[in-house]
Image 1: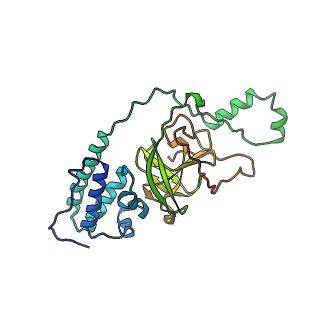
Image 2: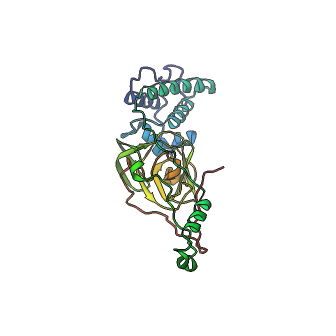
Image 3: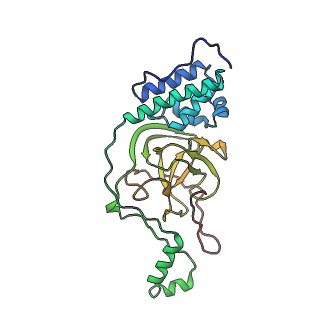
Length: 288
């Protein structure tokens, strides 16, 4: 739906904090005619629930950067603005978002030991040689790959995730989560349908990102089997899941998995698969 040149689209200037910034986003949505979330989803690639996280009844306390810019572009395009105008206006929103992010202060994290993630093959070989005598009888009767946790000892772990008071509706699980956890992560992390390698249902473009809970699943290249449940910034496969899924622990910048600051374990178990018939577990790794 095109709108006239008068009035001009709302701009983010004047937002002193994230609540005011969210109101500016809502004003932009109203300016372009309040299109349905599904309509904006087609233009932006954002899941409808991700749009609700920006301007809905219970928005995130800090809107994700990538999702915000996609939403702004979609609203301006829906409002009939030229590509150049869309680009210029989006830059203004980006500058405002960055200014608010830079205003936020956080304590300097304490020094922490480097978390070494050895290739699974190296770890298995080391364990095999070190325990060959004691485990000879066991290894003769089982071909299972031994589980080796390379995480730092709990006493050395510093919480990297922080609880927030945000409430969000989870269409996949059919419930409302009260309280999320904000954790540092690698931008561009894939979100999987289940806590194992398989269908990618979304991507996380923000850092930090919010997470709901942790679950045990398939072992990944981080040396453990911990996965974190969240919603991606935009959908990939199986759009009916609205980008809800699991991120392997090695994509989060943590000392220990699960992170001591993220205290909620997922109360549901989905798609956890055992070992293959040959007894060897797959290891989930970063996409090349």
